[in-house]
Image 1 (cartoon, rainbow, N blue to C red):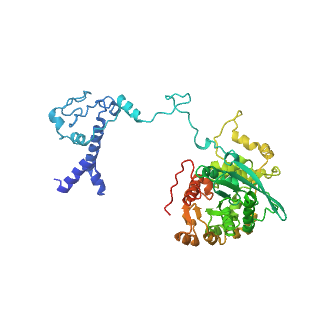
Image 2: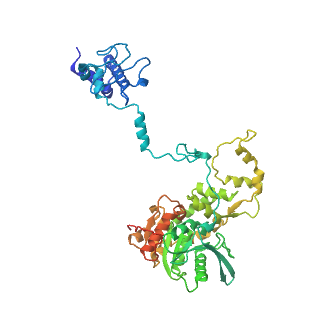
Image 3: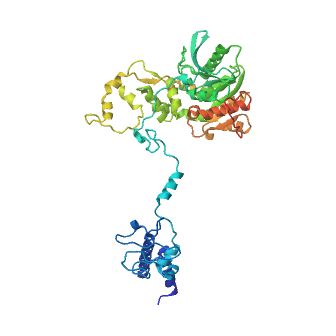
Amino acid sequence: MPSNGRRRRRAACWENGGRAAASSGRRFNYHSQKALRGNIEIWIGAFRQLPDVRGRACPDRSPAGTAFPVLPRGGSPSLPGERGGAAGSGGPAAPSGKAGAGSSTPLGRCAARWPRVPLAMSALEKQLQLGRLPPRPPGPAGGSGQAPPKMRMGPGRKRDFSPVSWSQYFESMEDVVVETDSGQDTFRVYKSGSEGPLLLLLHGGGHSALSWAVFTAAIVSRIQCRIVALDLRGHGETKVRNPEDLSAETMSKDVGNVVEVMYGDLCPPIMLIGHSMGGAIAVHTAASNLVPSLLGLCMIDVVEGTAMDALNSMQNFLRSRPKTFKSLENAIEWSVKSGQIRNPESARVSMLGQVKQCEEAPSPGDAKAVVEGIIEEEEEEEEGENGESLNNKKKNDNVEIKKEPAYTWRIELSKTERYWDGWFRGLSNLFLNCPVPKLLLLAGVDRLDKDLTIGQMQGKFQIQVLPQCGHAVHEDAPDKVAEAVATFLIRHRFAEPVGGFQCVFPAC
């Protein structure tokens, strides 16, 4: 006679499908395995007898040639060969009240615990569920009943990397001629707006004034201001006698000379905004009092400590860039896919100021370098007329590629290494000592050095972090930068909002 413990374990196997014995880590004996097999069969049988919403048993869930009865509400059905059903009759048997209310059989106990969930959906319920879904978009012919055209996803889809003109973002372009003792220097500027404070925009190293194109369109739609984006010495379309002199002192004087030539004694209130190298030049210009009626100062993602630490690896970064591109589209594509400019809209206008056409067509030996610099998008193989893939045909058409003029960088930044230290050394103290309202925009708070951290705690400047951006913050997130600058100017009552712009003042 089994002991009480064995009876309890056997009852647990019946109720929980053998889980109690399995959790205890004990090996099933013969009786436990037999009870588990019987319990599984009971559950399968009860599942097959669940009715659909029309009150019939599900024939697709029953074995071939067998129809199980409908599971009554609050009772248990009778299997063929059991009480209340004819064995092998194949039809549903009406259970008696005693059998329906009782749960003496294992199947009755399982059915009493099993929820009555419909396994099929009637036409009415389908119609009701479809009515809750949003309408299907119109098809190619405009009818709502047709499926939309199949969108080509994955590596076969092409993106638009065609260049865009500056005229879509700026109102005018001007070449400012600066007279010096040794000759003339011509600086390219792009302008927008006619009223309000003047925002003088200075780009980073290797970039040009076109890097501010998308930002300009965003800021003029928020506040009433004037924009002047300047191509610094040796960058963009600026032509000077000594383009290799990129010292902070020389470029700061260039900024002051351009402002003097453009406005003379009627200079409007000016806010200097600079990114990276341009931010350092803006600080040096403000510290030297080269710009009259200075209103404010803004640096974008440039910190002395971080910049000085990054100078050691700057040459490796410059060597990793491609030297030439076979077209403007390839240069724009590289800038987006390499992460230099994460915003394709800004890259399509900004790269025109970073690269120029080579004076000579690339020689056959240089054709490989032209192609190696491109990160091309993977395309699906398409068969030509002779069964040869079109990609292979493009690779074999090297003669046509060699005939096309290549594009290269406008400035070789690797040759300007001797000026890097002068741009950034002592930058934090110069920034903190400028007696104007200051704004610092960073892509990450980890870029703050010791001096700026102390100054920020003392409230000497306003800081705002714009996450999920690369180094070119004003290009990756032009709307966020425009909103931060507009809020800064409105907060200090330097500008008036336009277009119903509602600024949200930061907490600190």
